[in-house]
Length: 153
Image (cartoon, rainbow, N blue to C red):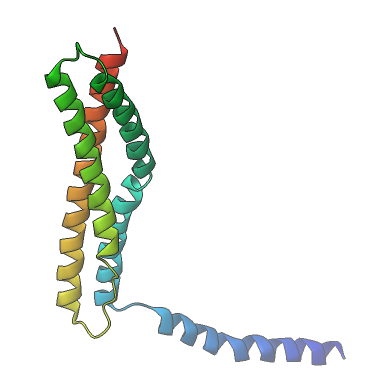
């Protein structure tokens, strides 16, 4: 009986092994697919890096808007300062819109496309998200700088 059980277990192990190998071989990506996945992941890493900053942009806009509203009610307000604050707020809004546009305009459906077309599309979108990242980070930095100058007497 013990020999039968051992034999049965060996049969099961050896019977399953080839299909496991076949499954692994069928899930291996071609060099083209690997390159596409790599470029896609690079692009999405940039997106994922700055996406959390959308909330930061919203908070900065809220602070700037409150400050702009209060300065508009003061008669002695420096018009240049009010214009600067408005411009910083506009820059934050532009950065927010750039990210939203980038996300809405991409579905990343490449069915029926050749490898080179896919790589060109991904490289272009990687460059686009780099531009969005720079726009977001620069507008945040500028808004934080001006708010710090105003808040620190």
